Length: 110
Ligand SMILES: [Zn+2]
Image: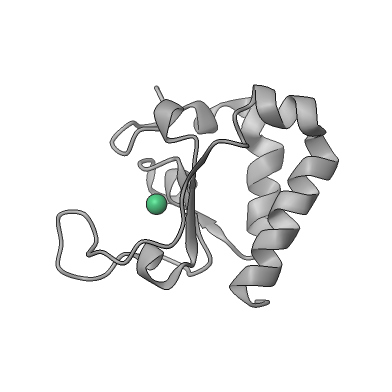
């Protein structure tokens, strides 16, 4: 897997190329929710992947931490191309893997 910086740049570049700016904005894929945050994992003592700056949250308003696919915007079919782009770069979606924290994707595997 390429370094997190390069693969994340590819994710955003490919997303913009695939959807175009208007669609990116309509899908709230431009709503940044956080990246580097040195803190323990919620409800645990180990560190979140955010502590290494290797995780990104997008659009937290429409993808709340505890929402599953029945409520999270990013679980909808129109986001499938976005997740394909993310996964092509070796990043992992918590929503797609574990059906919670749909805002979150990370450069490390689960
Ligand atoms: Zn996160």
